[in-house]
Image (cartoon, each protein chain N blue to C red):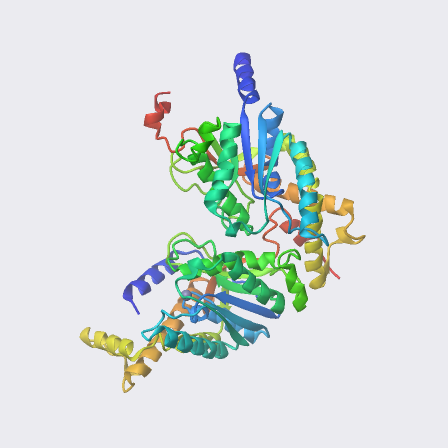
Length: 293
Length: 305
Ligand SMILES: [Zn+2]
C-alpha cells in the first residue's frame, strides 16, 4: 500500500496539466478546487486564457479593464498553484467573429509545448451557458487536443522542434446551469461521462482565487445591485455600498453556492462537476487491453 | 396539415410530465427576436404568450431578422413585402406595438457577421429596455432552419451583453444605456427529439388562443391557402367523413377555419397535458439563472425597499 501511494505521488508529481479558459473567472469557479488539489500533489499546471476580459468592469475603459484583469488573473492562478499563465488576448465577447481554426491552432501550440497528461477545457456542449466565448473556446480546445497528435497539422511546428503530442485525459468543465448535465449521453468509451470531484480540502484556496478577481467581481456585484434597485429591492449586504468586504462576501456566497450545488446528491460536502474522458475514451476496451485486466 | 405532425405532437404530449404553470414576471416591455414573419405565431409557441402579455398591460415589439424572400410561391421581392405586411397585421391582432425588419437574406444568413446581427439586437434592447425577450432556444437541437439557429445565437449573447457598458460604448451617443434582459422565454419544436426540454407552461384564455389562431392564419402568403382547404375537404370526402362546419364555405374560408381549429386543438392539448384549459410551453431562463451559485442566496436575502 505504501509503495502504491509513493508511486501515485510520484506520478502526480510529474503530471503536466493544461487548462484552457475563455475568461479569467470560468475555470476558477468551475474547476479551481480540483486544480488546486492537483497542484498540491505536484502537478505542473499551465493556464491558457483566451480573451482579455475587457468588457466586464464598473466605470473602466476596455483597455484599463483588460490590464487590471490580466494582473488579477495572474494572482488568482497563483492562489491555485498554477505555474504559468498564457494570455492569448482576444477581445472578450468577440470570439464569435474569430476563425475557429486560428483559435484551435493557437491552443494546439501550447498542447505541443507543454505536453500535458491532462487537459481541462470548457464544455462546449453544456447548454444554457450564456457566455458563448466559453462555447467557442471549448470547441477549439477539444479540436486542438485531437490535431496536436497529427504531424500534418501545422507541420512548421516540427521544423522548430515542437513534436506532436497525445493528451491522455480530458476534463470538460462548465457552470452548473445545464439541467441535464448529470445525464450520461452514451457509452463511456465514446462519450465523456459526468463525474463529481470532492473539493472540501481546497475550497479555501478556490475561494481566495475567486476573490482575487476584483474587477470582475465588482462588476457582478454592481449588476446585481442595479437590477435589485431598478425593481424596488435591495440586498442588506450592500446597505453600506459595494464595499470591498461586501463584494468579497458576495463572492464567498457564490463559491459556496456552486460547491454545494455540485455536491448535491453525492457523498461530498463541496464539489465540482465535470465531464471526464479517461484514457479509454474513444478506444473500445477490447483494443486498449483494459478488458484483460 | 400533415397527419404525422398531429401524431408526433399528440404522442409527445401524452408522454410528458406536467410542467409548472408559471405567472408572468413583473414588467411592462417585451421584445420578440425571430428571423421570420410568422415565427411569432407558430403552433409551438409565442402567439398565446404575446397575447397574454399584452392583456396584462405589456407593450411588445417584434423583430423580423430576415426578409422572408423564399417563403411563399411568389418572387423574392413580392414574398418579402407581402410577408412583412402580413407579419405587421398578425402583430396587430396579438396587440403588439410594431414590427422591425432587419431584412437579412432569408436562409442565407450564414454570411452575416454574427456580431453585426448581435449589435442590432443590442440596439433594440437598449432602446426598449425589455423585461422579457422571447425567441428560439439557442441550445435546441435538430433545428434545420439556419435562420432560427443564427438569430437564436445572436439573441443568446445580445440579451446579457447589452448590460455591459464596454460593449458598443458608442451607443451612449444615441442616449442608450446598458440594459441586461432578466428573463427569456425560449421555444423550439418539441417533436424534434431530446434537444429542447421545456421547463414551464404558460396558461392561456380562450380569447388569447382565438387571437393566436387569427394571427397565424393572417399569414395567407404561406398558410390557409384555398388549395390546402380544397385538398383537406377532398381527403375527408374520400374517407367518407363530413365536417358540417365547413359546409358552404369557399376553399379559402375552409382553409382558414381548419387552421384556426388546429391552433385551438394544439393549445388545448398542451393545456390538458399541463393542468390548464389552454397553454404554451417554454424553456424559461429566469432572473439570476446565470448565477447558479448565487441564485438561492439572492432569493433568500433580498428585501423589498
Ligand atoms: Zn421561422
